[in-house]
Image (cartoon, rainbow, N blue to C red; front, side, top):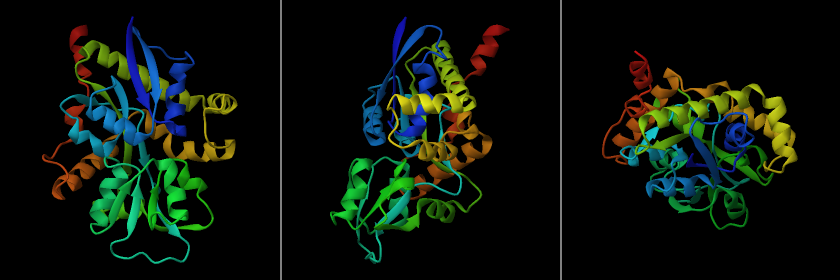
Length: 287
């Protein structure tokens, strides 16, 4: 049995989508999945170095790793009228060159932020430290992600929703691409197809059995929030739209990559569907 490393973030939606595998409800055919949890920018940086076989990433990272990793079509998180929030202390006015904390250089929110605020002074830090950095004045503002968008301190207010920035830049009508997963291209194709199918089943099983799985995760202390917040957060980021990417989601990804290319962040313009695992291989083998 091959040991396949699967890295994901410790936020509630990633934990939720993966743990159907961890609990043995879904298993790959010829491998054992070993999971690693780390914050999303740590995973982005690790993927640039090729550390993991399968890894959660910010969608904005993908053009930098496209030659080494295939894009998976499951375990995705998109915003639909919501997403990361640019926050500041209540009543403060941000200058043109305000200092801001972002959760990582290769995060999707960082890409959109840089396009929208080219004069801001950016510092990067772990997403769990951003709220405190704004409160103690280390930075003027910060972009909150994950569960923090629901639980931030009452001394803070939203300066701007990243969703609104996305709508302005994209022209509207598309969900906001946030995070997905990728798989090492050196993995043999038949195995890659099985691993992706395993993840698809895991996300689908988790989604369909949410009332069973969510309390289990809370009881084991695997989630950072309470039951009510978890329920609300899963509504946002681990739902029917997470199981399998839709044509509208692919269109949104392509718009993200177009914006990055036109603003000089990517060397080439890519189209997301060109970088998926070619699952039609199985159909050809069956004939």
